[in-house]
Image (cartoon, rainbow, N blue to C red; front, top):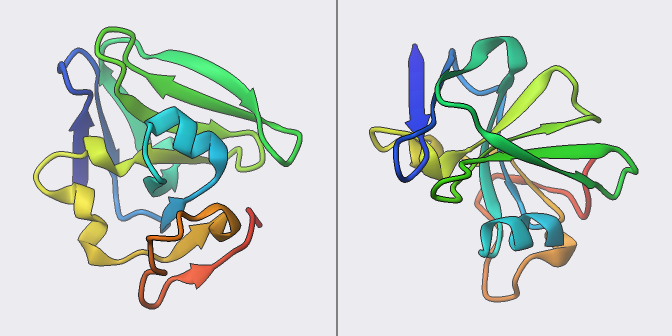
Length: 137
């Protein structure tokens, strides 16, 4: 199975093969700032299963709460958030679900885990069945 996605303007396209290792929401303040929203929704996939198929994303590094680098990739033309590579998870890519094609942004209506629930907006409720983590890890 191959899942494809893109930025809003279509300059950057990407894909991953197989099922996500985990589906996750992250409510940390960095993710809120990066998306301009209350959280990010993520399909976490092995880096070896992920590839950019068109264009060259820009990136921005931020030091996470772990003290390690979180490298955020985005389209320099339209500003769409694309994916993140976390130094603490060197073998995984966190693909931002909003850019996935064909309705895949819904992550099959299954969220496996929510991170940084301590920062979750109070108007949001926990996802049914999702593990709740105050921070990452």
